[in-house]
Amino acid sequence: MEKIKVILNRESNTLDVWFDDAEKEFICEETGEEVILKKDKNNRVIGFEKLNIFTDKQVNVPIEVMTT
Image 1 (cartoon, rainbow, N blue to C red):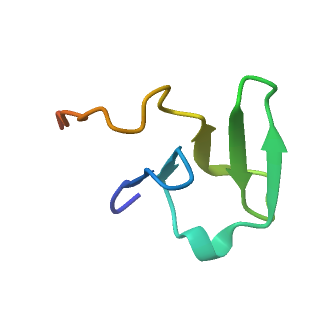
Image 2 (cartoon, rainbow, N blue to C red):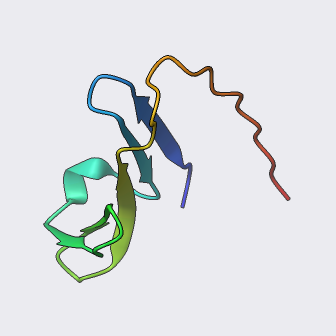
């Protein structure tokens, strides 16, 4: 894994996190918790999408990044 890509989309009220190239997405699987797993053709999870991330779209979101 070279990088993790995080997309916070206020218009669609979603948070997308990618562990691999989004172009490799082959199938999606809903978990029933407003989370969609993005999988490649080998059924490996390469990302996820959290639906309805904000109850208030105007809220400011502080970002903290940690690596070890």
